[in-house]
Image (cartoon, rainbow, N blue to C red; front, top):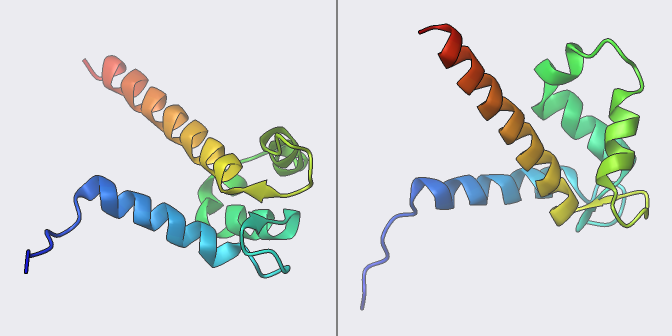
Length: 103
């Protein structure tokens, strides 16, 4: 029998993203989508530093609306990944800018 290799770092990251989505999705009934309440819980728990630094109280509502591409009032996994990708890009850009100023 072939021995399974352990997952790569990227594979573990993908597994983690799926696990986090599944942790918050379904509390309101549909485990393949995040309701607005589930989205807010996710943001306030998993991205609390980002959420707490927002001066505009409507930012999470606007984020939800902008991420909800099919306008069904919920975020499916693809829409969730758009959020994660956008956050990753913003963090990467910030890291690059920070590195430039440190030279």
